[in-house]
Image 1 (cartoon, rainbow, N blue to C red):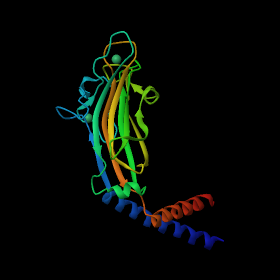
Image 2 (image 1 turned 180 degrees about the horizontal axis):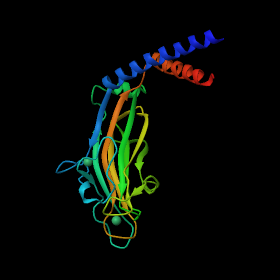
Image 3 (image 1 turned 90 degrees about the vertical axis):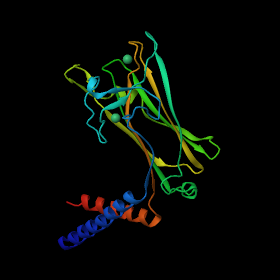
Image 4 (image 1 turned 180 degrees about the vertical axis):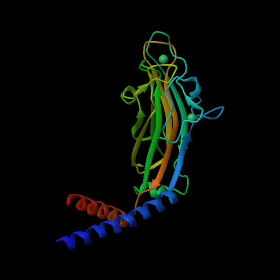
Length: 238
Ligand SMILES: [Ca+2]
Ligand SMILES: [Ca+2]
C-alpha cells in the first residue's frame, strides 16, 4: 500500500508540472488586451474627471495593477437628491491580437473583465462598470455584464488614512466567461450614482482592463481534468 501511494503522488506531481508549463505558455502567447484605462492621462476613454490619490479621499490603492497617481470620479451630481452620471467609452473590436471571428463563433475565446472600485467614506455613492457584447451589426448580444456596483462598494473595508478616520479601501472585481458566438465588439461604460447626501458623485474607478484568451484545446481540457482529479485524489489520502 505504501509503495502504491508514492507512485500515485509522483504521477500527480508530473501531471501538474506539465499542466503548469502548458498554462504558462498559453497565457503568454494567446491573451489579447481589448480595453485598458488607468486614468493617468490628461484625458481618458470615458471622458471623466479624475482625483489624485494624494488628495487622500480614499485609503491607498494596494492592488495590482497599482493605482499610480490618479483615478476616475463620477463628477458633479444634484445637491440633496439621488442622481446619476453615465460615461460611455464607446465600442472596441474583439478582432484584435490575432483573435478571429471563427474562434469566437466556435466558443474558443474566453473573456476576463477586471476593474477596481472605491468610494468616499460612508456616503453610499458607487460606480458600476457595464460591458455589453455586440454582433457584427452592433446589436446587443446576450445580457449586460457588470462589475462593482452598490453591494460590492458598500462591502469595501475602511481605515484611517491620516485625513479621514473612515477612508474606504480599494477593491478589485472581475468576471470570467466565454465570448458569445457572433460577438465582434464590446461597448464599455461606467454609471456613477450618488446618494442623497452631498454634491459630488463619489463612485471611484481605476484600472479597467478587459482581455481575451484562447481557451484550451479539447486535449488540454482533458489534461486539466486529469490533473485536477489526481490532485484531489492525492489530497484525500492521509
Ligand atoms: Ca490610476
Ligand atoms: Ca458624494
